[in-house]
Length: 371
Image (cartoon, rainbow, N blue to C red; front, side, top):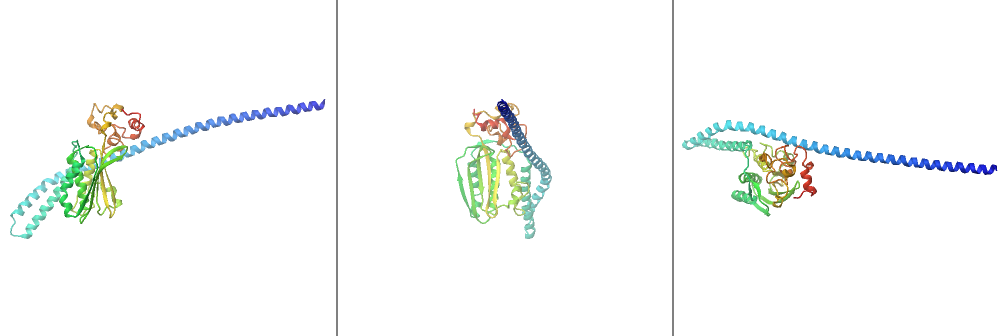
């Protein structure tokens, strides 16, 4: 009898231990499950915080970019006002000096030395008048008159103008022109840009060389561009000076050979055309200057434009303040937004932040908004 009771007691204890083991295992599994849930929740929160941090970094980068452009704009505006005032003060007495020198040159017949002095005065006055002209061009806020024209025709006009100089300096011209669409340009202003770049290329090759002019299409900032590149085989530009070549009065030419305003004027014109100007150069190998004109393909004109989705009213009110209206509503981010080279104007296209955050940009590149 005692043996049976012991067996029952041992079985009871064994069963009790088993039940407790199952209970502990269940509790442990429950705790593990709860902890996994908490870890998953924390991971989600970390991912959300990382997304917010990246989002804020994009905003900060956009603000820094706009601030740099505003500072540069203000600096150039102040310089423009100062140089314009100086130019106007100098112009009248300079004109008088030049006029008297030319009269003396005509009347002086006896003394060759005095005639040479008069010729030097006339020559230097002409040079100063050219500098004043460049200064006033740089400081003047002229609005381009846009027409839809062929950039090929403008480039050909410039090459014909330089034809004799190119022959005299034994410079070979290579042309690579592809079919490109017409773009909205001011013919006279763009002709001035191409003349400036061609003149610099010719000056870099005083004793022979190769001038290569290319026209074609390029894809940049998610848009199509008509690109014109002018390449020389001259002396090139030192790497440390590349960042300064578009600054006013910075020149690598000898004193008296350049004003240091040709490239700044060219850059200003390209900014007004909502385009880009770039330079690549290697010392003793040559330089390539490229100007690019963003264009909106014809088939995009019938699709929804940025002002229609954003409902900013630029198509009805103050349309002149919007660079994208009326021809570039499908590529506004490069014409009037984050990626343009023009002035910072935060009143449209979310330019003070980042166009990649703009719902129109997102709709274009997600393919959800096509008509």
